[in-house]
Length: 478
Ligand SMILES: Cc1cc2nc3c(=O)[nH]c(=O)nc-3n(C[C@H](O)[C@H](O)[C@H](O)COP(=O)(O)OP(=O)(O)OC[C@H]3O[C@@H](n4cnc5c(N)ncnc54)[C@H](O)[C@@H]3O)c2cc1C
Image 1: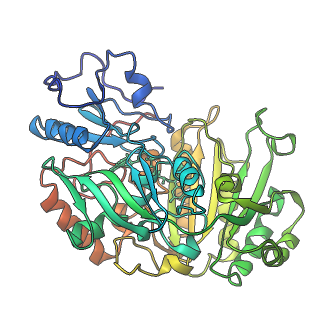
Image 2: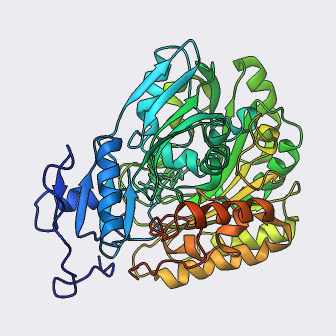
Image 3: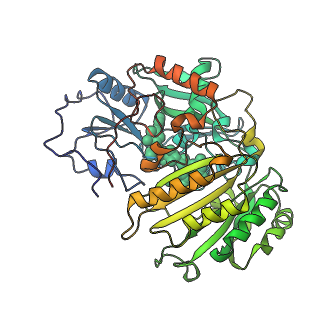
């Protein structure tokens, strides 16, 4: 992997991290634990810090922030590496993976989650009380970053964004202070953290709402890729008829030809409809029935299951790999048939490298502000289109990025914004309209105003989706 890592010669000398300031380990590049600590799910890039502070609590994070600020060193945060898009070329990495507190308050239907907690851990713990968090497609994703950037869950149309259900946050701001932030204590920061991303500090924990969902009806209808156009047309019509308690998406992709996959899917081009319905099986069956006529089905996995098995709805790969991704929030109407056909052609099996095209049904509760409004944008979106590319064989990153651009150009007349979470790798910085596209103009002005006053030296600039105008010059590989 040539990801632009600084050579030993180009590494600047950084002042020693003060001994005894933190409880967790402090790792330098010479430490044998360093590589494992900086590596994450995104294997196309990684951070190259001179110092990794393996934080165990808010005091450790505060010490790391004070050290970085005092020496004017760049700083980044990593929990799992799923959302890495601006690799740190030096400076300080705060690794939060040891901050794995999950404390459920069943009576209040809330949970306190630490900065390094993955959704899988929250789902297991909440499930013991018959409750569920607003988790998404994969158990390995970090719950805090997912929520700070909005968070589109499996039952998103019923319950809204994960950020809509945050009642308190603990955050270390650029002055090193640990702040407990609520709607009353600091309304502007509270509003901005919920959906505005991690540009305002290192969030050390969140209090999130849980919902009383123990079991649900869901899974996939898997169609042959030949009928992807018909499946999309059927889904277009069908999504206009379904209740908010049903959230679905369509993913069109060609599976790699690898032995871990079931024989029927290896190397196969497919169109999969993923469904999650918060209701009983008989109603779910009735709702899904019209979709089955969309084309010949290869397989079907729909069933009633506990929320702890909700990962089977998307059944995503859990091994680190390289990927790039971009997205567009679309209006209430999907693009016309001819446009969708051209998008399918650009992303189909003839594309070099692996291309995953996904459309998620939005609307419902996602379109309503929570009781205490937050910064999440794009509430007028009816659909979310995501294009993900995975380099394979001789495919070049540039070629695959052009596929992403072609898709975004094709759907531009229907585009109303962009989602912060579904941006990956270098593509994250190339979204048309940049970070501003994720917010209303008013919210973007409020967020950049707060950013300027809360983080005047732009300490938190090596960030997934930076807010400040001067974007960092991260190092990226090919
Ligand atoms: C396989 C997969 C499935 C996904 N499914 C969904 C889904 O269903 N719904 C959805 O909405 N999104 C989904 N995402 C997107 C995901 O929510 C984002 O990529 C998110 O940023 C990942 O957070 P992380 O902690 O796992 O990753 P990391 O790479 O560790 O963090 C991502 C970025 O968040 C910032 N950050 C992390 N921790 C903190 C903190 N404590 N304080 C401040 N900033 C912080 C940093 O800038 C960091 O670079 C998915 C991503 C992948 C790869």
